[in-house]
Picture 1: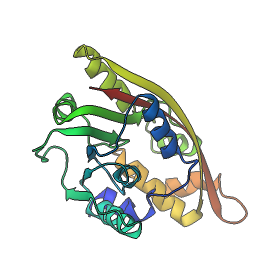
Picture 2: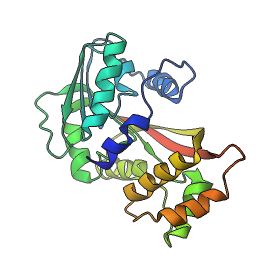
Picture 3: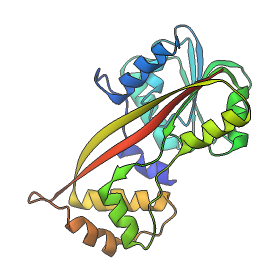
Length: 241
């Protein structure tokens, strides 16, 4: 079982909240003249289908790929619950995926699937229009920074958007970009918080020390035995043809 399989049950999943961050992304895409009606879509690193299921309501066909089988199971369950049947899921990573069609749109949202210039070249060639939503540095989170310090490491915020923009600039490609911010507050029971942050450290290549994690989280524990984590996230939405 992969680290992402372990995270699947507690990961964000599809919801109908009209005030959600995802709905803000869809509104922004409309301003970029993106129209998904009756189009084909490849969702790269689709995860639990947070974006996939919304877009399947408009698209003619959606192919979602992900390296986590457990994530795909959540997507399939949620799609079935809202009677969406035009999503085909494939359990694979981006390196091994063979793009047999030219899609109208290729989408990648906050996924580690796109990591290199070769990954971007492949994404570019498999669709007419490409949409990338990625971290744009400075993920402000007091707890994560304290945990990295306790593990004698420096927290470096993810910045996939910078890599994409550099690649596009080097290719002299025209693109549209929108800067987005999100404030997120999550409250978890203490022991669940320990497990959650162990996972985050592992994903970032660290060997988590449960004792050190517990000592850090003790500073944030409330009287009801919960940890409240506040993060301010910065993203770039990038669209190119």
